[in-house]
Image (cartoon, rainbow, N blue to C red; front, side, top):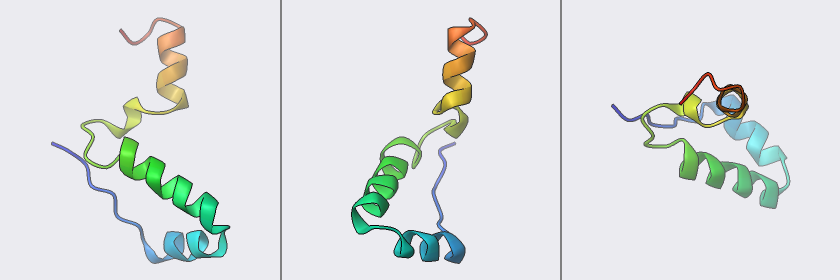
Length: 57
């Protein structure tokens, strides 16, 4: 099962208020790394910390 990313209205408003370059960078990262992935929790600091401590193979 792959995940889809849906931006609710409050996120859209927040992104519109940000600098356009930053907003584009954030949405591009989300689309590249989270949209369509099998486990969105595998990407992030928690997963990185777990790998450093040997909890995730």
